Length: 227
Image 1 (cartoon, rainbow, N blue to C red):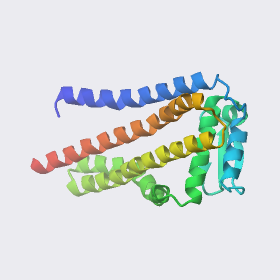
Image 2: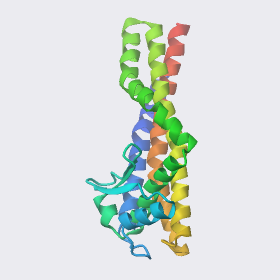
Image 3: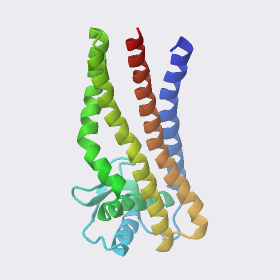
Image 4: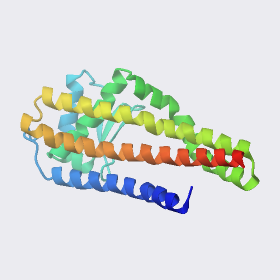
């Protein structure tokens, strides 16, 4: 790669994640100030959607932090950050429904979610080991170590890519549930989609960056073999 190409490459690696994070924060901040029409807290929204889907055993807990919301499949628990747990905003309703979407996926054994779970140990090992192996391969001029590092990195990248359909599907489920249960009105659908789409951008950005990193090392490996 030329110097110009490298500069563009690193600019993209820096700008894309920052842009995605900025978009998420600004969208969340905007719609966290607008109350949802049902005036339900995020915790109430989560409980209603869970109960309507027969998931009475799934618990809801408050968790500290900002935008730390997640679903824990091991303990069958939806954890909502303080603002979303107690808040009555459109953002709180959207985020709560999204996390419940993951709980519904879990209950239905959604294929991509199951696949992602199986990738967790491999992806964790790959993200921790890949750069050490690649660096060792470069320093020692050992192509096999370099290739092994790329394989480990590919496993971590695959996890990022598989995360995309999981997150988009959870958002689709969230919208369907919010509308069908009457938690939001038709005039709120557009705003709710904006919150969900903004959150999805972080996963898209992460996948793009991961794929670009992988491609860069693949090209380096090919160049090493050509030399």
